[in-house]
Length: 397
Image 1 (cartoon, rainbow, N blue to C red):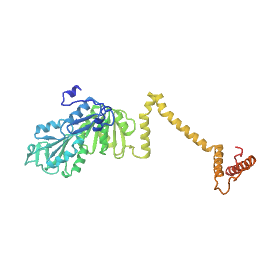
Image 2: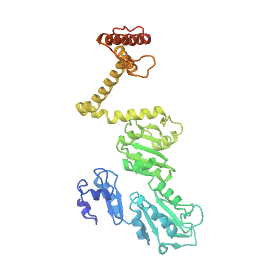
Image 3: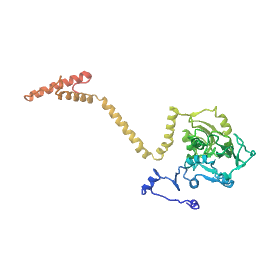
């Protein structure tokens, strides 16, 4: 609260059970829920519940969706954020950024370079474009080969979008795939979206400073790979459904859901051995069953240890009642006495049916003796039918 008070941000608390109309307006379906309302935007927070994470969310969410870059000083300010920066040059690419801005505003920085910030050149700058000679530059390490253009500032590199900039769907797909730095600090909000990119994920669980620095240095040379440092084993264990020891590198392929262990190994050696290393996991029946049992063990077993009586009431008793009902139903079906009674009941229906051709009621009963004789004859017919169905049963049963 004190740190946010120094920012142009108003913090409010709302009881959604009392102000239900406001909760419905902003799509509140669970508690607690954090929303950032900035002008005509409503952004939902799904990150970690820490002060630094909330500060970052509030700062990024309140900034303009697309910043205007009219000078090198403004560009330097944007690059200090540490996020991936996408810059559009030309109105066509800016229109594409407008369509995706609200989706990625908390994950990257979007900016539009005005014509005033461009410096036409007639010589090659120190970093030439890999496709053509540059035609415009903002600073010596940022040049473009065409206008309109779209570039990404990521991992200390300048990546230029080489496809058709008028294809907004293609631009959107490129931004969604490149919106994260190659080296990231692992947490649930950062790991989850990376799984949908289908790029290789390299996790390091531990606090070895040399290995962390190695990951940062190699980030700029990695293609279709993300390097993730995690300080909690559960981030990896929930993903691969297996235990992980400290100082371990785990390489995970989201496309096949297979992974390999490299305990104590360096990043470079792990990447070299990845192609021949044993693979675990997968999408088969056995692998899926293993994941289910592991997650049950991981999430349910601790509850039995901490609250055995409550878990017994919630799980064990209902299962026991279901088993008892199943056993009683099976015994009922195999009970010979019940079967005889059922057969007798069916025969009585035949007796009561006036349209039955084989068994009919007497039209008149003169006295009690005739009535008893008729009933005895009916019982004999029922017994004979039962004995024909199962001779081992006694008529008296």
